[in-house]
Length: 226
Ligand code: ZN
Image 1 (cartoon, rainbow, N blue to C red):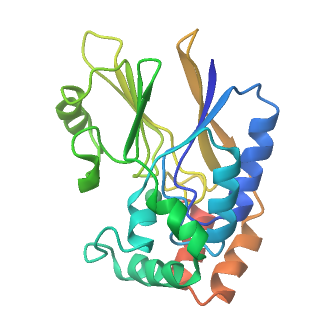
Image 2 (image 1 turned 90 degrees about the vertical axis):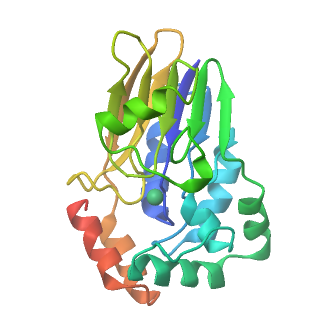
């Protein structure tokens, strides 16, 4: 079974389309989305509809919940708050209902899928260091836990075991100083995976964000991958 894991699209239509084009040629059996379909970007409805259409499983992210009032935005920075309000206004009723239906976790083939952390995913905690990863390994029993949320592609290994926590990176707002879209391909039979980077026309995305009246900083950061 070959998986494509995509996460943190954040309303970036051009990035999502480029990644889906790239997935098309990769003989993928299942596409799993780890959440944050919306927030920051100018095309939330398109991204929700496209993800719904092409994904086998979709997990809820904090920005998805923020846009539909299911989680507080008090801890968001000012730009994320503005984007969440804009997204809430912009989402169609149908797409809002779809986001409301998403689960926090999914398990199949000894793999756990979650947006934030295995431990109480609804708290939207982060795994940003080996030390934080170590705390999470006792909170799940599967071979691999795939996560998103920090927009940073990284793998943590449990000492003396084959167990891993793998952050699949971000499709729509990479933050590892590489502006290209990021996703992860995992072959369950061979137990091998890798990140794929994909270029997309980010000048179009940048203009759309500014034209929509969203904070310009959300457009600017895309060119630097920050
Ligand atoms: Zn995110």
